[in-house]
Length: 162
Length: 162
Image (tube, rainbow over all chains, first blue to last red; front, side, top):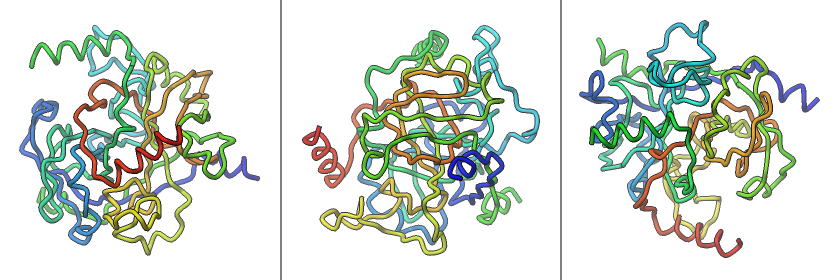
């Protein structure tokens, strides 16, 4: 019985936004890791933020609502759409072309005023629904991280560009 | 108009599991960061995993389906239910008593056989619905992370216990 329940892939999970991203970033600004943006949470969640500001970094979970054709998602993509990088499974990338289009980004928490969070490095467009924020702690910061060559190449390019 | 759309807190976001956690961990075993467990994904997602194994660590997003009384969630909790730790907002903790009960854990990826991932350090119970897996990269590994004193205390206890 447990197995039957456990493998029901048609189970529906319904979520609702707790807030929205507010940013002046447009186009490629969104990928600029120094860009500062805001998250406006529901006013009734003010107390739920108590103590969060003592963390320097947080996870932001958001809904990648730009993807409209959910019926025809690819299983593989070229990372960032770049044909010079190998075709890999969507789960080897952070593409928004995925089932359950949830983005997760670690950002620097700058300040909290009421239910407005100011953060640095959130790669989400203006109006993006926010699903959750979580404190980032030492367990989340891994050492000895290994990544494929194509990913290293992307990181080196970013370093060169500053 | 954009603002009206952006602030609709009743918007529903519907997700479906891409797989389920398989683990022999029960009770506190789940918090043992050395425990090895499996994630069984939908068979049709095999190709979507191509290349993921080249990453040493991944994020696992899962649905904290143990929480039943979603109408009466607290705004504040004592971390881990411990009265010796301060009462803080739910968003300053990783409690499952939160709107949009999505857990995010960084795990070590040990191997992938077909659509079965073997991972170390997944703090989720057997049968937990999995929503997403994502590669963990250097951007996700932050240095200079600051956390509150109560969180440091928890981390020190963990170290003492091995």
